[in-house]
Amino acid sequence: MLGKRVHDAVRDLGCRRMMVMESDEDPALEYELVEDLMRCCDGVLLCSPRMPRAELIELVDRKHPMVLFNRVIPSLGVPSISVDFQGGMTQSSAGAPGRSWNGCWSTTAMRSPSICR
Image (cartoon, rainbow, N blue to C red; front, side):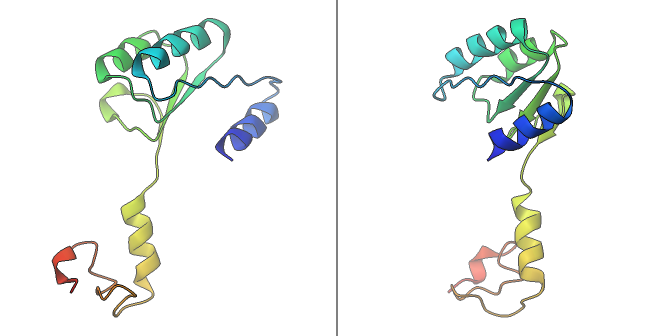
């Protein structure tokens, strides 16, 4: 689903190709693949990067357009996309005060898990 949405956005910008590389969550391989992509692509979208922070900083310092998905490092200065799980849970429970299916008070369970019995 994410790949399709990214492809549609890339196509809407007038580009015809999108490359996808899989690292099998191997940080060393991930770094190598990003280096390859930087040589032949206009930008890189890193999905849940596992590489150490120092290596990520090294790649960002090359000034190649990059976006991080599912990893936020504010000091890097690159755009990041992540899911706000706490905000979503707060919104979903805001309209339904009282006890939920697991016996917790739905509006306070995120702040005080100890009230679950």
